[in-house]
Structure formats: C-alpha cells, structure tokens
Length: 334
Ligand code: EAX
Image (cartoon, rainbow, N blue to C red):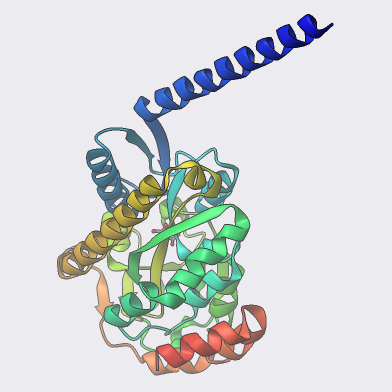
C-alpha cells in the first residue's frame, strides 16, 4: 500500500512538473509569436481615421520589432461605425478609430463631446481630451468591454446642402439633413428646425439621389469624398468639434504584458497628436479645393443664431449624461 502511495506521489510530481515545463514552453512560444490584429475604420485610405490607423500601425510594428502586425480594414468593409464598435466589444475586431458621435450610444459620457459649440478652438479641445476629463471618457468605455486609448480627430463640422445658402439657423428650417447614427445628433438637428435622418457613412448616393438635402462634416470629408460634386452650398458653422475615439477590445488589451499595454497607449496617443496636427495644417488646402470645385461657401454665418436654438440641450444633458461630469466639463471650457 505504502509503495503504491509513493508511486502515486512520484507520478503526480512528474506529471505536474511536465505540465509546468509545457506551460513554460508555451509561453516562450507566445513571446516569439507574431500577433496579428485587425484595425477597423469606416472611411477610405488617406481619411483622418486612416491616417491615425497607419501611424499607430507603423509605430507599434517598428517599436515591437514586428511582434505585432496590423491589418487595416477600411472603407466600411467591416460595416458601419456602430457595427465596428460592436465587433470591438466582441473582440472580433481588435482596434478601431471611430467618430465620437456613435460612441455615445455605448457610453453616455462620450455624448458630452457631441454637445454643440462645446469647444471654442483646437487648443481647448486638446486640453480637455488630453486631460483628466478626456481620460474619464476613455475609462468609461471599460464597462462596455472597450479600452479607450486616445482621441484623434475629424475636426470642426460644417453644414453643406443643395437647397439654400445658409446664413443663419432660420435657413435650416425644413432641410433634410443626414446625421450620424446617434439620437443626440437627431435631437440637435430637430432643435435647429431641420428634418434629420440618421444614416451610416458613406452617403454619396443618398446625396446624389436627393434623398437628403444636406449633411455636416469637417472640411477633409467634404474634399476627400468629393461632396462638392453633389452639394452646392457650405456654411462654416463649426457647430461641433468632432473627435475620434481610438479604441481596443478590453480583453485583448488586458492580455498584453504591462510593457505592451503601455506601448499601445503611447503609440496611439502619438498617432493622435500627429494626425490632429496634419489635419489642421491641411484645412487651408481642403478649403481651396472645395472652392476651386465650385462650392458656394459662407465663411461667416450667424453662428449665434444656431447657438441660441440648441442652448437647451445643455440643460437636458445634465440629466441625460451626468450632472457632475457636465458641470466639471463646462467649468473647464469657460
Ligand atoms: O468621418 O459619419 C460621419 O459623419 C463621419 O464624420 C464620417 O464617417 C467621416
């Protein structure tokens, strides 16, 4: 009996040490393995989202000595931004650069960034987004299986349409405006008197066919998507600063070593700073091209008339988003 017991113990020790050795080997393999990840974006090559994605890919691939490689799926090959967010939550897409509008459907704190006329200028946007309030928004995504890495940008959005030269908010009345797929956007355009229709990007066909009269987006979108071919008028309403939330599946992030986690965050933050600067530098060129292509541009619409009509959204947002967060945000942008 004693012999059997000893034999059993020896067997157990051998098996468990074999198992441990196997584990060591396995983790050794993982370290040398190349890990491939998918980055999803809805827009085309050379778009704002794509520029940020490419920069991030280059930085991580080179700094990890090729331990990570990234496949950028662009031009909505993975579906709409709403759908890409869900795929990030599930982990079937690892990383995505998403316009903040639809992210508000997941974490209501993100909606705070879609409040009209919140940021006065780029510097203020950077200060908030790169500061503790921005971090709170990124961190709020972890309740939804998402790691928020950084904010890159679309830029300040302007209104285009085919019907009327919009000089003040009164001219918006009755216009069929496409909005991002986010209830807050629909609400804002309703307050402005428009007839808003949420639609996934891109929308060239709907604009060409006249299903909608207009849309709103930053200069690069109007230029890169050649919206000047299907839209006659643009008004520089700059009604909202449109950021991107650069995100990752939380479980995939948490599986990285602490060093790699830091690498991913640092590289996305650097990619964001690079992309924002490039976008801002390029605005004058985009504008020139838009004008050269015959769009009629109102550079100084009566922005206050817009601000007045949407003022109430701030009161509502205290209840709909988070009273304390909105109070701190408004204090910070004073
Ligand atoms: O980034 O859906 C939108 O209006 C976005 O701004 C668009 O994807 C371009």
